[in-house]
Length: 137
Image (tube, rainbow, N blue to C red; front, side):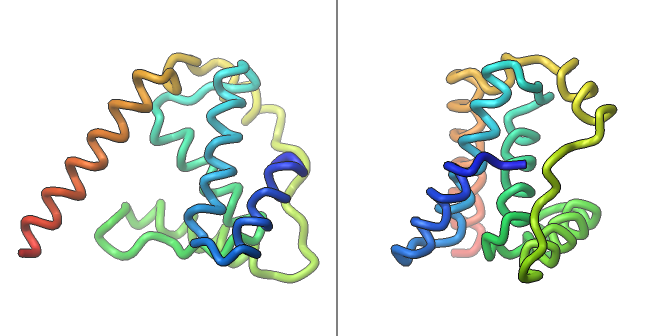
């Protein structure tokens, strides 16, 4: 379950008219901090980002699932499920993850969200976007 401060910051972002992806960034930031502090680990920076986006969708951030072709079908289905769950009024995000899931994440490495790893991930993503723009042109 996301921290109250994270949910509040995301609500403020949305209230100021910022994009849903900006509000979702708060949840991703929280997730990266959790991995760094050892609350749990992640196998890659992408996994930490995906967990944060899932939390954001479940908390009601109107972040649409990825378009067809942008992600695998299972990823898209999970994102659609999280999005629907977050859009239902009055339904709260689960407070607690299953013990097995928490234990599995705790066994994962912490180094995956180091500054270096996140920097490399950002560069790869930017390079991918650049190539897509060139293909479109």
